[in-house]
Length: 94
Image (cartoon, rainbow, N blue to C red; front, side):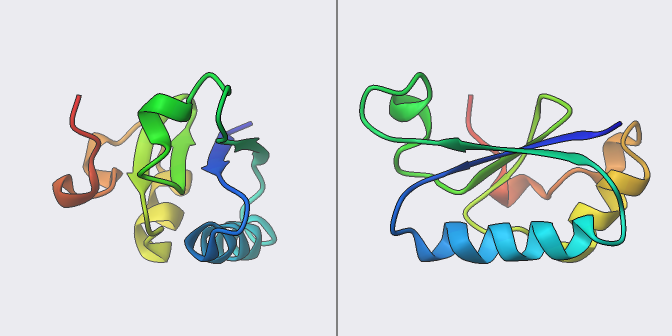
């Protein structure tokens, strides 16, 4: 089963929108969803505090700030196709 992790924050409207979209897609395409709260003291705070929401699919960075529904669906349907990952403008600079 595909694993989706949503890194989000409290009182974050973009996070709420991302979660709503993810849940919508989940009703049609089954996957496990884990939500991780990014707050001071959490293991991902320094990395993601200014970039939430952040979405990982099967442990790999997918996008940040906004979830593109079409790309999200395509990636879930074809998780091993590298062409389905979110576009470079939304990629994390590592």
